[in-house]
Image 1 (cartoon, rainbow, N blue to C red):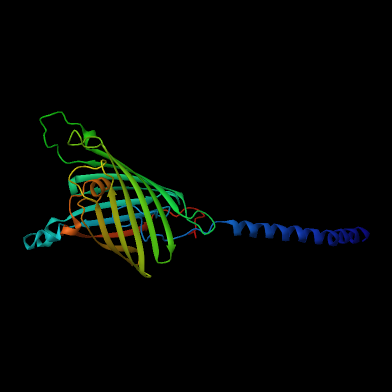
Image 2 (tube, rainbow, N blue to C red; image 1 turned 180 degrees about the horizontal axis):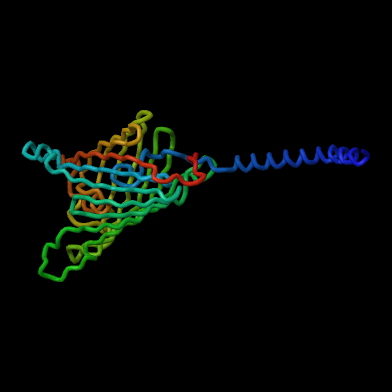
Length: 299
């Protein structure tokens, strides 16, 4: 009985200190939670602004199946049904490996191009952290058309093209997001002796939110003088994103022919303001392939 009284006395003597330690540990955890960055979400609606990449990534374990159509010039006249007779298409598969890293592949009917890319998010915009989101994108493209002159020595590497981009984006408000995209495109082989193998450009993109499920997007790539291919123009595009359940549908117009970086950034020949406008659309549908353990949607 005496031993029991001693144990009870010791218990009540230590209780205040134990309670104080528990309270302090709870406060420390709460302070840690307060210091966690509040990341910005939905800078753009999908992983593309229109043609080029946005700072958005596919979630880890999610597959994004993209179908893009591009028609001919509206000013081609009724004989070509105002461009509808000249449709091209790209099928793409994008996959999220982690919260920051995604990869993708695609095949275009335009010049029978195959392409692949990897995109990594270096910085993420947060209210108490980085003021911008920064991503890096590396792409490779292969033109599988038959060689124009099979009678000479031709190398498959001549049809390889590479691009590197930095994507610097910021969501200024719920309704406005802007992005800058410095880009370099490398050609293993160019047509003219004086044509540059490396083409440099700076892209500008933006998104204005019109409603909960709709936004207006714009995109423009300016090619730097003396670092562009001859007889090419700058790519310009406008689009309307419409979110409907599990997929995003985009209607767009542009003066560009192809749908890879090499095609629309450095090889556009149409003059948008002279009626060389190609209408098109893209459908994006996502599928959850694998849900990572312990994954939860980040703020």
